[in-house]
Amino acid sequence: MGTMRQINQKNQVTLPAHLLKSLGVKSGDFIEVELKGSNLILKPKRVEDVFTKADWKALDELVTRQVKAKEFTEYSSPEKARSHIKK
Figure (cartoon, rainbow, N blue to C red):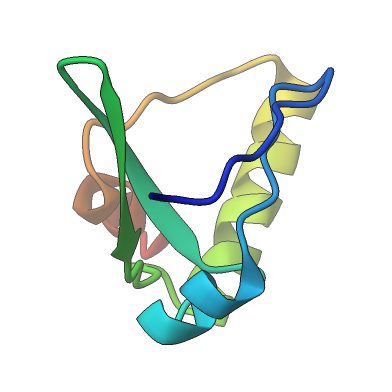
């Protein structure tokens, strides 16, 4: 039998530390939540940032300029955003 947890007012659940440790999951990590029938399945996920710090800085500067000019660009992929900031 598993451990019972209560959902709080913000729809949050505290997961037992020993279970997270056994999966190698720590604060700030990501988990995938999936519904299978009447069960929630939680799976640890590793997320890699597709942008460098320099890319994020350039994107921030681009967005700041666009907001001031009331212009907005929507990108369909990280690669298209990266190509725009490299211009």
